[in-house]
Amino acid sequence: MSIGDKIKKYRLLQKMTQKELAKKANISRSYLADVENGRYNPSIEVLTAIANALNIPIDELFKNSNETNKDGKIIQKINPKFKPIIDSLDRAGDLQDEDIDEIAKQLEFLIDYRKSQKGKNS
Image (cartoon, rainbow, N blue to C red; front, side, top):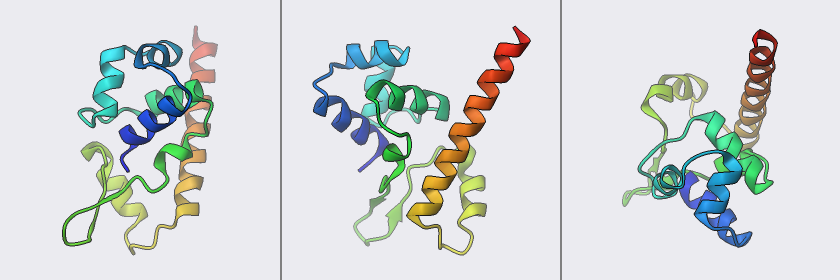
């Protein structure tokens, strides 16, 4: 299941419209629709805002977010800009779910830290 599919699933479970979720996440409804339909790969900041608006931990959006092709090989839906980072983390092919959870936590920490630094510079 893709990240967009997961966002849609959690949104529907909470009986929210795209408009309601977009407003809570401070993004446009059309951008949310594009994310849900896999047309855009959102930044970690946008994913954090969406997860917060859905009241779920951000790592819920990353769990099992891989898809398989017809040969059974995993196809990762990764923004090409971040592929070298992911490849270096998973060089041996043994990146486990708990590792991904920890990476998500570290990214959340980094985002929070950067936001706090921006607030100090204002």
